[in-house]
Length: 300
Image 1 (spheres, one colour):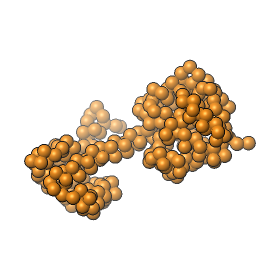
Image 2 (spheres, rainbow, N blue to C red; image 1 turned 135 degrees about the horizontal axis):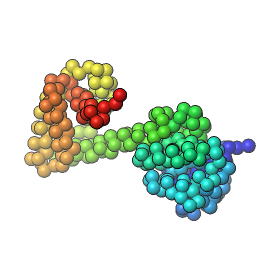
Image 3 (cartoon, rainbow, N blue to C red; image 1 turned 45 degrees about the vertical axis):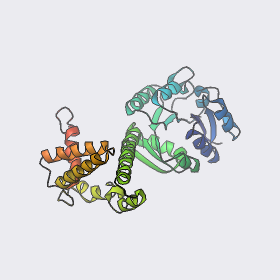
Image 4 (tube, rainbow, N blue to C red; image 1 turned 90 degrees about the horizontal axis):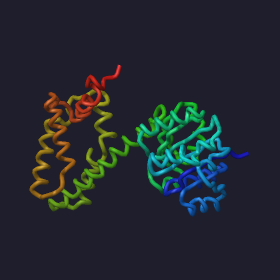
């Protein structure tokens, strides 16, 4: 007999994910506030539930894929929430992107009812959701993540167990923080190129041949600071100087350079910390010391 799963949240990502679970042979009970979205999954073979509780009833696990933490909380614990239908020993897999502190609170409330939580937010695009090739960042006890794995494997081709409950959400937010901020810096850089009369496509090609386009995570960090090597390949002092020149040019062109201005200050901080002649990746220990070395934040 096919394993029964509940699925709550049938939006741009949730709907194709639910379809892939059906294709993988699971018996699906679905719910969405949009009745048409739920009915569409009904035509694909899912049972259309009248509430999250109904979707969770008799399910080995309920999966939530919802817009924010407040909606997840209502779907789990509100009137007609999934906890009303979940049996003790069942699993809750929240694949939404929410605050980790909310995930921690959900896990505690669920545990009081004998239900374990795995947080499993996703990376990549809606097309990857359609193709079943999402990157899934899972947080939870090892045994619970293994219980969830057969369901997650129907949804993604890369599943990373990031640590205990909440670690998946933390990893997702760190990843998105970097990619979203890089988008602004990329836009600023191409705008600066155009403003100075350069061909933006040629500028892109040039940057793809350097760390600018290749990224520090795959080049300078593993080669230098993450190996404990801060002998200079490109010194903090030089990075500070060159960023100052770029900011002056941007000002002359009246081109936006907000991210660069903040970066210039960060390199200045590294110089004041005595790291001017170290490799530019020394920015990492400089900033890390602010977050982790203060007495109020120091960990035993």
